[in-house]
Length: 89
Image 1: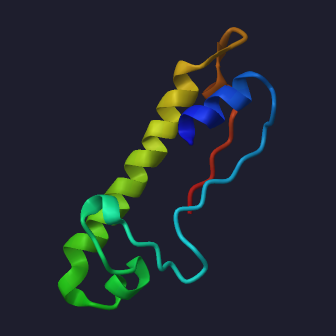
Image 2: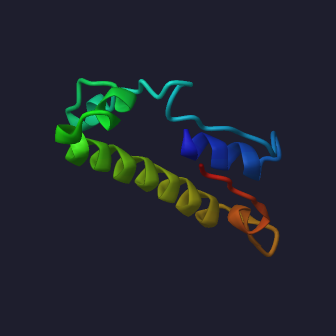
């Protein structure tokens, strides 16, 4: 998705995008990390702290990848990241 977004920005197809990692209650299951429990449920189980941390780290790595792709995509005298605002919450 990050690669596609960088391409869309560089082609000026769009200038607004949203990437949402979790639903309204946060029941995202990070199965790529070997997890089989929803993120929201894990946050209520002290025995799952390592899994919650792993999911947070993964999400931030994906944000970093998006920023890197935008920075690697030339635009004018700079790059796409130079003209972007990113909000993460």
